[in-house]
Length: 262
Image (cartoon, rainbow, N blue to C red):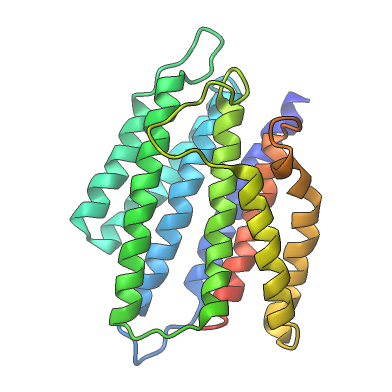
């Protein structure tokens, strides 16, 4: 069983690499010089979530060395992306996320202490908000125009990662999320899942006649159907490894679908 769990956890890193590959493969319009920066920021946002969720799995696995290597790999990827972005504010917030991980304290059972989970949660939120704001600014500078439904595709990409991060954070808590407290507003995972379902239905209707996007959304529906109940009943059905694995597969397809609208 332990080998199975480790294999599932390791697959998250593989899917993360696929996401970066998908994002970097999208052609950049010659008329949009800031287009590459937008793509890098998208990759950084994804990597930020992956770094945090990978650490949460590290805690769930009682500080397993293999999972630590996966977390360190995500941090190395983030370091390279932050260097490319060259934004001092984002650099500071990225370092805060890394510091939260490197300074985390653990219980005698090997799981991260509540205060460390809270610190990481705050750092992740501050970083992703800064990245998202900068991405929007760069999109405007590059004159990259998208419509409401295209923006919803990217929102789904972020929403899925937000849900997964909160889900795995609760799983990393020794008491199953019952004592995770933060200075941030609580993440109501079940409500986010309902929003995700509503938007997914809207996107499927809107892009039904676009074969390049509709096929990706059908794959999202299949995978989402499998784990939706885990988000709705997140206090009863705790399967962090499966959720983490399917999160990467779903977000990969949503990001690819979004890039096809640019």
